View 1 (cartoon, rainbow, N blue to C red):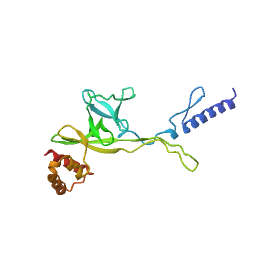
View 2: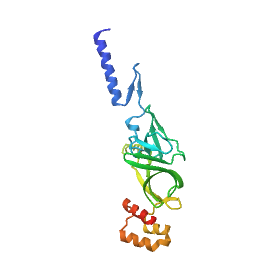
View 3: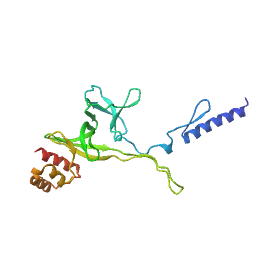
Length: 224
C-alpha cells in the first residue's frame, strides 16, 4: 500500500468522524454510517423535571436513601441505579411521603380534588401545616407536540415542555384535600359561619390570596 493511499484513507476517516459529530451521525469500525435519532431537529425543548439533577431522598417505608428526581409531566419519580440506569418508581399507597433533605422538600402521594380533573391522585408538595390544616403545592408541566411548517414563510415549531406551573391545595380538618381559595368570596363560601371573622381577618392583615406568605396566614387563621 502506497504512503499516498494510506494518508488518503486516514484523512477520509477523520473527515467522516468530524462530519458525523457535526451532523449527529455515528460511524462504526466497518465504516458504515448511522443516523442518531436524537438529532438537534428532533430534540425536545425544555425539561419535564422540576430539578434535572438527581438528589438524595428518604422514601417512606424504605430504609435506604435513593437518588431521585420528580417528573412534573408524568407526576412521578425517577431514580438512578448503581449501574446508572434511570427507572421510574411504581406508584403505591405504601409510599405516601418522599423527602429531599438538601434543600428540604416533602412530596405526599394523596387523593385530592382538582378543578380541572375532579377527584384524582398524585404528588403534592407540603408547604405549611398547623392545627390539622396543611397547605400543598402542585407542580405541573405540559408537553406540546412539535409542528411542521405549512409553507416556506413559516418555521417548524419543535416539541417542548412548558415551564413549571403551580396550583395550591389544602387539607381541611375533615381530611379532604381541596383547591385553596383564591378570593374572599371562595373562602367565605367554604366557611359561611365565619363570614364576619374572615372579613375582619382579611382586612386587618391586608391579605393577598396570590401571596404565599399570606396563604400561610390563612391556614394559621383557619387552625385557630
